[in-house]
Image 1 (cartoon, one colour):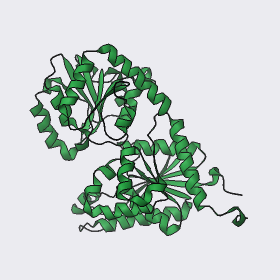
Image 2 (cartoon, rainbow, N blue to C red):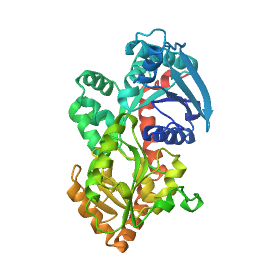
Image 3 (tube, rainbow, N blue to C red):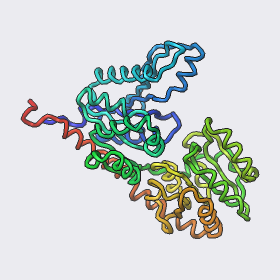
Image 4 (cartoon, rainbow, N blue to C red):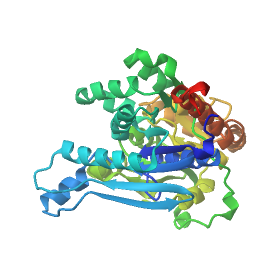
Length: 406
């Protein structure tokens, strides 16, 4: 007879996993738990293919051996992989070779039935190579920036195409991403699918009052994230410049370090210093606690996959303004549960904010519709069913026939 799920072992690979900060890590943990509840034995291997920390250590002459730190988190076996630093001369291929050796060692020990990479550029290539060399199925999940940004790097295009074409199945968090990938690599047409992230219900009344609530004045216009180029923050700043009623522009999160000088200048140039509150990097529980204090939740992204922050704000019954990109444009129904504007448009964003500032009853209507949408269509049971179908499919394709099983 064929193997049951309880005897099948899978390994997810991701560049981050909680308590690391980042949407990919949050999604990887959520999906790992959904798969575990289906009966799979779930491992997660965490590693980066961007080695800035290793390069800094190498330059300082701080060497180390290859390391794999294994722990358990909610019944999931977590392996954090670190390449050796043996020389001040840093070469990416040396680090990648070390990581790949560790992945191979994990497979020898645990005999994975499926491997599954999140974020195709960081983890997809090594994970797919492991699968091909060991004749096991591989799923690659495209999350957003991997096809929105890295596809424009000609040095990565061949690797992206090879990874897509050698996948057993590819998943996407938006129809836009799947459409782009299918244009870039037509052979994936019949082994790819798109479905949205999910989110579990949150009881906001159980959360503590956040630290900076006393600084909020007037209408609170909020946004959440790890703020960087793709988040469209310049356009939000410009949209708020000419507001005539009292307001606070609340940034829940912080600006990425590599762009900090740019954002310091943009915030100063905006003339909104007295209206802006920035929380800095905080825990997810603290992030959630701020949502009920927002009158308007904005997500002016230029591209953004399927952001968890959007779903969390919908659960909090916030009135939404988002750009018509990726899953944001699929989830927000303009005039039904929020307002959609075009990316790169401060003018459209300003009109939408002014509309909601002056119509509190409309904000309430949108908020209730947003919560209903996320509870009905974006709950974990829906996402789990999608993953179960995909895993059943790729495992069935790789399983021996009934006649071959003794």
